[in-house]
Amino acid sequence: MLLVALSGTVACGDRETSQRVAQAFQAGTPTPDEVPRMLNTDLPFRYPAALYARKVQGNVTLRLRIDRDGQVSVDSTRIEESSGYAALDSAAVKGSQELHFIPAKLRGEPMPVTILFPVYFRHPDAHALPGDTILRRADTTGVSP
Image (cartoon, rainbow, N blue to C red):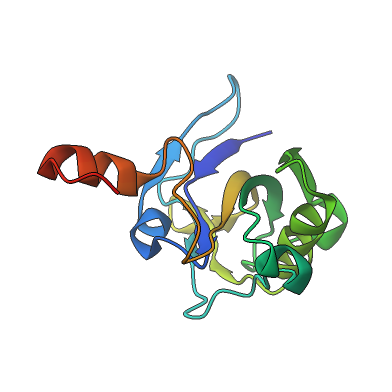
């Protein structure tokens, strides 16, 4: 099985993150020449209203299987790393069903791949979580959040 870590999307967060792609491959599996590219212009993840009202934030990492047509195989979607909040995890899984990709390719031919896809739930009025890029930007400017 091929595993591509695709630094994914955000719900209420940093769009730049969706452009970065890192690859991690298991031995003996063909490596695609082209990694899958997300086609969605609007992110399909919906912040659960009750958690949004309480300014609860979290990260969910999903394991998604993208088929040769660029569709997410719903039955194979798994939570690789939980946010610690069932409602955020469920929202990430539900939203992933609406993701569409240009499939990965090997020598020009579409191929199925499994990717790790992070989803970040961020509230605009909440404090940044440890490790968020906003903290790194603040550190480089000398301005504290």
